[in-house]
Image (cartoon, rainbow, N blue to C red; front, side, top):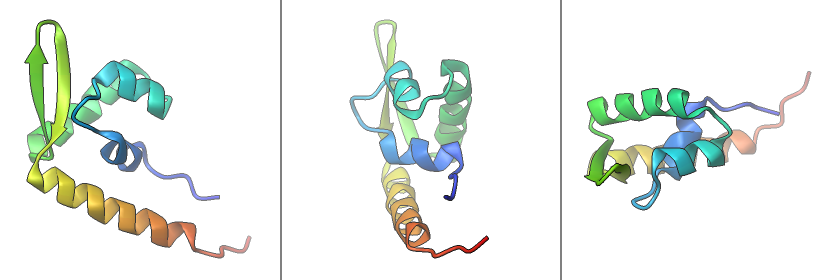
Length: 85
């Protein structure tokens, strides 16, 4: 079984309605690790963070949506691999 880097999983699950806490639960990572990943996504222009009160929501940018689509294609291809040990 192939283990995918957490950033690949994170980009697939970033949705307009997800905040970091919800996303960390989905990905089984700590909140602090995920916020570091999301900060990198924001620096790269893949997401924007929208603050509503104390809550920050994450929204994919058009660049982020392209990365998300490319990641999905890569993961689908990797899932089809027949790797022998």
